[in-house]
Image (cartoon, rainbow, N blue to C red; front, side, top):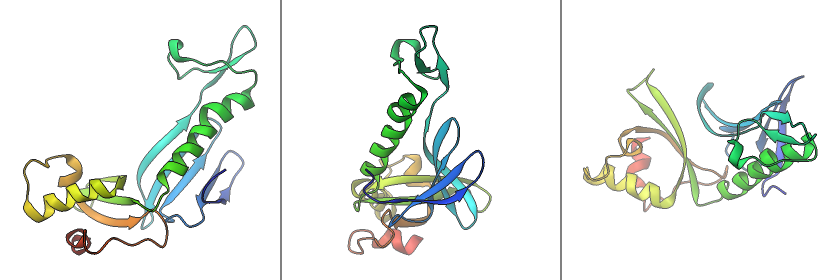
Length: 176
């Protein structure tokens, strides 16, 4: 069971989109015939994909189902398509959502190269924010990862009503 109830926000013949109650509305999940994809949208633009849970369902000569995207040595076989979808995609998605949608995580949207430049979305922990804050405050050259160099456009709590810890991340707040 999801920690935050999902809501279907759009339903079409071949797909549907859901969001989660209490989670920032920037995050949405697209369910199609072959995948579950988690996207971030910001100000009307698709900013980045966070993760995907896909399956290319095939039936073996022994009437078992497997995902053709998995390497043969790692394939698991299931008695039905439904079982494959549940075990291979839905359960990992549920686990990801429950582990990711917590009060200590933040959604960080970054842009490299100004307007029209490349965009990135990440779920970051408080410790990752501390590294970025240190980089901004001190210019520490040891923190030379791409995440530290990209300009932060939006930093918000994963939970819809969560704000930044002002004591620890004041520099980040002033930059966004």
